[in-house]
Length: 328
Image 1 (spheres, rainbow, N blue to C red):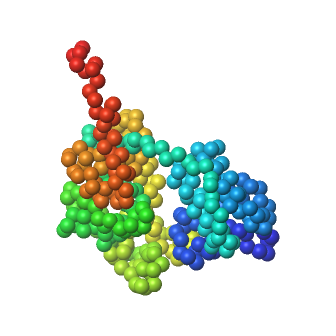
Image 2: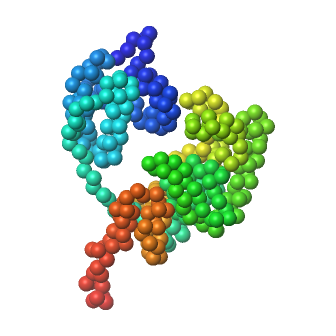
Image 3: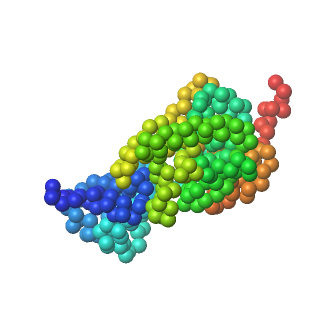
């Protein structure tokens, strides 16, 4: 779709996404979907994108639903990438209705650990991994929210955590376990020493969203804006070329969880998100109001939170099996 003298379609997508300050994760995701779309229709020339645009998108989205059986959220993500391509890059907004076959919205009962299983797993985690997982379970955080926490987002006095720009770009406040206070204070003392050394070495800046970076030009080196869980080493930001200390890679936490679960011998498919599910379910078991749990989790729709009532009703809607009455 290009020659060596002209930028490729994906080059243009990246350029515009960076001008609009999209995250690197979103940039990679959108580029991947656009690449798949082009490959699916075997479009060798850019001009082919302008021919029967809506029909091409409709066919591709239907293929994702019927042949690849992707989830509804995944299909929506692909649609968003293609809308961005046509509106922002090709400057040809879609005009006709897209009537693709929709992916089914099957809601699966989430995997939840018992309180005893959580007790078994946590001691088998070590160091930072254990602290992160305790926050996942103790505060109902998503793994991305945990690793992106800033120092100023943890309120020791009120025992609460502010999650900024969570899913749906919403802020929320959630609970914070008192048992973590000494552990986290000790951890932050070590992080502060790392930050002070970075500053002394001429570094110490952290990534800030574009609007904040413009509003507070010196905030990127301030202690309050540093990540609670920083990476072990400095790295070059692929978007700006600036050398910074990024946050901890969430894959390290998932690897630690996998190893701990294997040691315990639990057969459930446990991931970082399992601890968030367990947080909600165990609060429900303790009698916490469902709307309070909804607020702590940051769900916009109560129906999403209600899935945890189904977890408690597993085993035929909570009905005791007649076999239990036999006593044999």
